[in-house]
Image (cartoon, rainbow over all chains, first blue to last red; front, side, top):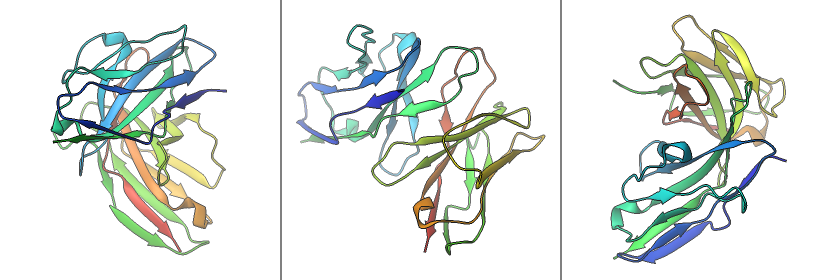
Amino acid sequence: AQRVTQPEKLLSVFKGAPVELKCNYSYSGSPELFWYVQYSRQRLQLLLRHISRESIKGFTADLNKGETSFHLKKPFAQEEDSAMYYCALSGSQAGTYKYIFGTGTRLKVLA
Amino acid sequence: DAGVTQSPTHLIKTRGQQVTLRCSPKSGHDTVSWYQQALGQGPQFIFQYYEEEERQRGNFPDRFSGHQFPNYSSELNVNALLLGDSALYLCASSPRAPGNSPLHFGNGTRLTVT
């Protein structure tokens, strides 16, 4: 079954502490992985995608095919990072257009 | 650029009624996808429209139907509403490109079925 699992509903960290939001996936093909973020009163928006291999707002995520994981990391959390984070998967084979989202993790960065 | 726009923002309907939700994609985008987000859940794929045709469909009953117009805007129709259809309905657009382009979401329409 195709699935994205985010085991933590809520993650609270102090400002300046490292952050790791976990994402595990199940997919029978070669997936494309994404992290989407929703800040308070804003729409859901793309944070980063694994094929870009870039750092956005200090966040990075590495696709680990062996562990089927795509954890989101940031070395030093900022208060403005507080938001809802969704991990999402899309298939890379032709004819696959849907995204499968996890249930999301709410990150609270405490002052 | 206004981005993806959805209307209405909120809607209250009675069980058994029908509803139509509307979406205008971001400028330059020709593909529209619809997602249902129940409380505490992630968005779930309903279907995607491209070139005015349904290109892929998720695990939703036939009560859910859609349409895409020549200007790329789209409608989501839900017939015979059930209490369980209460959710946030998200429209997302993307440009035609090889592979899966990232989605650009609207603010959603919150549907309440009583």
